[in-house]
Amino acid sequence: MVDFGDGFLWGGAIAANQAEGAWNVAGKGPDISDTLTHGIMAKEIHTKIEENAYYPSHEAIDFYHRYKDDLELMHEMGFKCFRTSIAWSRIFPTGEEEKPSEAGLAYYEEMFSTMKRLGMEPVVTISHYETPLNLVTKYNGWTSKKLISLYLRYCKAIFKRLGHLVNYWMTFNEINNVRTIPYAAAGVLLSGNKAERLSQIYQASHNMFVANARANKLAHQIMPKAHMGVMLSLSGAVIYAGTTKPEDVLGTYQLQRRSLFFADVQLRGKYPSYFKRMITENHLTLDITENELADIKAFPSDYLGFSYYRSSVYETGVNTAGGTGGLLGKPNPYLKISKWGWPIDPIGLRYLCNLLQDRYDKPLFIVENGYGDEDKIIDGKIHDQERIAYLKAHLIEVHEALQDGCNIIGYTWWGPLDIVSAGTGEMRKRYGFVYVDKNNAGEGTLRRMKKDSFYEYQKIIQTNGASL
Ligand code: BG6
Image (cartoon, rainbow, N blue to C red; front, side, top):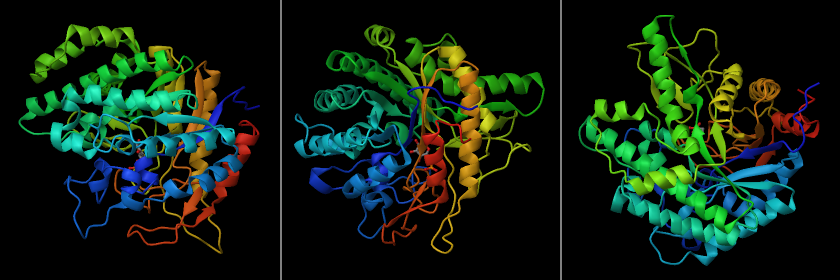
């Protein structure tokens, strides 16, 4: 019989900028999401707010005002945890203030207390694609070491105030997407030739590694019970070779390592040996000090949080593009794809859990997995069978991975209520078990409505997986 064991953290995950709205309420400053009209995958990135443009993040699904009712719905499904992020610019509107905003801290204190009251463990991402805009325009985001101290000031404020409510933290969302979506992952606008651009990418990564290590140190000083995790996009680590040609197999391995590199540094506490060759071959110029390396070594992360949506196929000469959700290469004839072209590969999740367990031997937390689809309302109901099939198939493989010996502590479905798509800014791409009445143009009542998947996930949680 399927059983996920005692204390498995069933839940769901969102990010502040994709759900809260209230983009300038109670002193919040603009962050990078607030100038995006079509999400972070858009070809052109604007860093100014135009008068007549429509910005999906400005209202989003108004979780800011409605979170109490929304969390009740999550509670009804039986959630044991709920993952969200703190909007950095609610706490430090420009990222540079000396003192945190009382309104911002009080807001999250109340939100996390509500979760606790409803029996949900808050799982908190400190920075989820929402760097304060000022830090982008002034410093070009994480390319500047200045952000390390500003981030730590922010961490200190939230650890001190919210630490009694939160045990599970993640320092950054998917910093390994810095190569494909640097603006989202690191608030960086790339410029210059290839070597310069790659140098900006790896300098930003390094600065975030240092911030991650120092935040871990600070967290353990302030909150002895805290679990400090990373959150990486690891769909990109599930890559199959398109042929049995040795070149393709080696290329596949190297591409996989490009994603794992970030976990290698943050969980093992040092740059891997293969990084030297990356530096020389790409002519990278990086500012890395001994002192920083010592901190990375001394304060590695406690657990590995990751997202998994899809797998990809590598073949020499075939373009492997990336974005939210991972990489996309050659089509895989054995897999179906979603309407957004994302291959559906539940076994890939079992493969990934095993790979990560073998490589890092730290607790694994699946903090994003989900299926974006359009929904049709028929006679007042939404029969989202494909979403249910995706959910069940992936959970069956999670259970297999548990049987394989993987130490998986929880699973949070991405977007348990429909939210704004990070990649495209759409509402039409829905992940939710709860429908939110709003369309791509921003029209709708924002009314919430349960889909069939709501009851299915509820049953799965109630039976601790046995209903699968
Ligand atoms: C992950 C991000 O990469 O993918 C989320 O952490 C995002 O913020 C999710 O929403 C799904 O991507 P999308 O583009 O469908 O919203």
